[in-house]
Image (tube, rainbow, N blue to C red; front, side):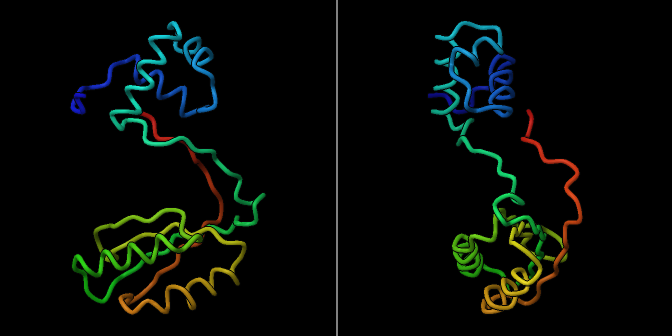
Length: 155
């Protein structure tokens, strides 16, 4: 398998359609990209095998599931090395409130996207979860007032 193979326009079309609706059957997907089902099926399996398509998921209305309070939480660590990074990453993986986590450059070391029911829940998250991690120096919270755009990444 050549993992360095470049994707072509047909692959891009398949990916774009799947990003809008990953529940399409192969026949429906093939119709949308104006190809026959068998070659589309083969391309789809190849894109999965090569790791271009890594997963399928559903977008959730977080308000409807009681987690509509979104905060970007910037974290500065006391020190940074491989062991501390790994420890912090392991802690974050065990926090269901954290839906995304990025190691960033600049004034802070990490940016977390946190989704909780309300301000009281976020305060509890910061004081009880984050506040108990010995590697954390400081936390800065940025509260989302309105979501303007959320879309899948396009290639």
